Length: 56
Picture (tube, rainbow, N blue to C red):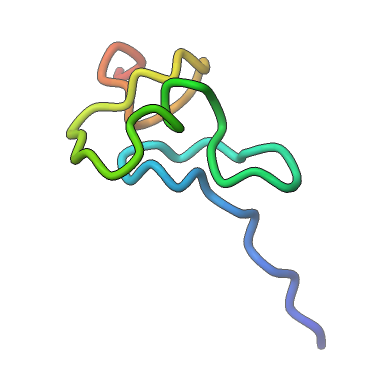
């Protein structure tokens, strides 16, 4: 049985959003973070588990 590949994750480490096809990042924020180390993602996408304001 063939396995389906996992969706591609944003290249910003704390972010778990899925970027658009052909992009490594889901947002301008994540792209701007580049090689910086972030502990919290501030991409602004609802449901991003890296954004502590979305935590329940």
